[in-house]
Image 1 (tube, rainbow, N blue to C red):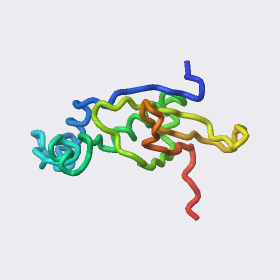
Image 2 (image 1 turned 90 degrees about the vertical axis):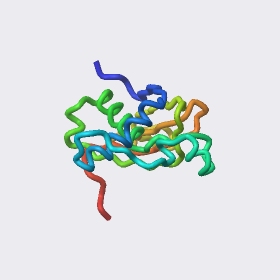
Image 3 (image 1 turned 180 degrees about the horizontal axis):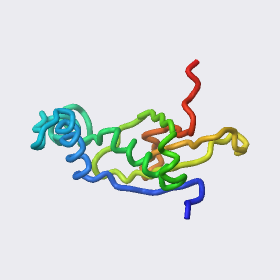
Length: 144
């Protein structure tokens, strides 16, 4: 059964997700058979992140992008993903330990009436602060 819109699901950004993503990315990009060893950065090292003025390690934006992609698949089914165009904008960082609510909705005008085909995407913290916004549609956007 397909979930109704608006669709909301909350996930927690775990240390494991943040640890594994950059290592997997570097390992795959390098065509390595063993996990890559990457230098300390805001994603992999708590002290480095704090020394950079952040409250803690920052999740790679593509983790949230992947979560939104999976949420769209939950809503409209995997066949939609074959032809879908996704566009996301990262507004604020997501930190280890953040509870993130993924929201999938139909676009609407200021009166609440639907305005277009496709879906709007949002990832927000428990306090309502929006971290990522985007769209998913079955056709590529105009290139004007």
